[in-house]
Length: 126
Image (tube, rainbow, N blue to C red; front, side):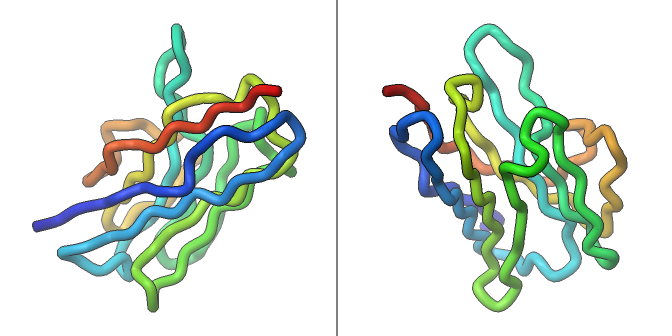
């Protein structure tokens, strides 16, 4: 059974850091681009970051550039999102997603993703 499972969400103070993880099972990530999306209350789900298959090129939403870092560990079949200098507006439900043989363009449409996790909640509050 193909599955993505996020972990690492939680409550953090503004300025703090969290690292989200997303473990894949039932398939290997080797041939996939990886991505993180988030859904905040009252907003549409948006792409936060994407790491392309093959080239490893990365794309970040302007709102997180310089603060978030996407990465992968194929040996562990896991992808990550390191989030630093967190702001209250970063609070959201964060989803990981993957797309086979995919190159991440500046926009990363949800419909391009093949598989999704169920999400992990990030709360940023003092």
